[in-house]
Image 1 (cartoon, rainbow, N blue to C red):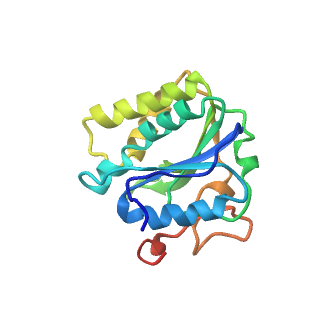
Image 2: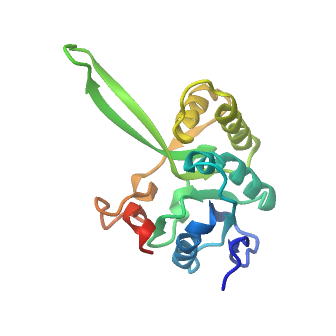
Length: 205
């Protein structure tokens, strides 16, 4: 019987890429499944955390988890994945970016009722992210965590705070993520997608 308080991790030797994530006890089976996916390709460390408060409180730990991973693996690029993702192959190309941080950006053109003016809605996903081992990425993570803890607006997770932090981070170089690595839902993902997400798996895997 596995100890639900222990991390799930590979034998991590010096590497330029470490995949990380975190899970509460009820998501341990998903983290174990993701570990099986990535084990043939890359080192990984999935952190076990307690389940305190709501799911919002849980997902808001993301920047702190990545900072913890960066302390443990200071020379590695950290790839953060939600543990209900699946990985279909190696993701080396995912970290071949000029920026300090990468995430998937979804743009949607919309128009307000009775208005001729179009607006562009911007969504930045935290489902799959890349953080280079430098001070600028660490600063973004600290600022993101501060925004989560101090913002006065309703958050509903961690991604609104991520957007607000990114758009103010004049010190940062950001690279939009190739959608093949973004964790698109498996129901709409293409054969070329390497990182996919399966919301329906939460009660099955």
